[in-house]
Length: 139
Image (cartoon, rainbow, N blue to C red; front, top):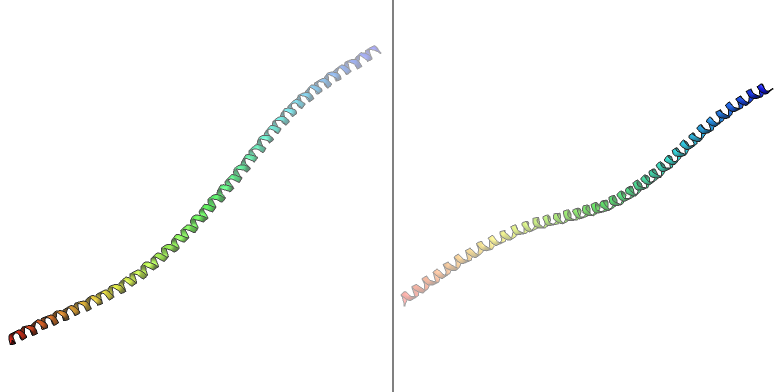
C-alpha cells in the first residue's frame, strides 16, 4: 500500500510540477498579453492623435482652400470688370477716332473755305487798290 501510495505521490508531484510549469507559462503569456495590450492601447492612442491631427489639417486646408477660392473668385470678378472697362475704353476710343476723323474733315473744309475767303479778300483788296489807283490817276 505504501508503494502504491508512493507511486501516487510521485504522480501527484509530477502533475504538480506540470501544473506549475503550465501556470508559469500562463503567467508569462498573461504578462506578454498585458504588454501587447498596453502596446496596442498606446498604438491606438497614437493613431487617434494622428487622426485628430490629420482631421485638423484637413479642416485647415479646407478653410485655406475656401479663402483662396474666395480670393480667386474676387480676382476673376475684378478681371471681368477690368475687361469690361477695357472694352468700354476701346469703344470710346473707336468713337473718338470716328469723331476725330469727322472733326478733321470739318477742319479741312473750314480751312479750305477760309483760304478761299482769304483769296477773295486779297482779290477784293487788290481790286480796291486798283480802283483807288485809277481814281487817283483821274484826279
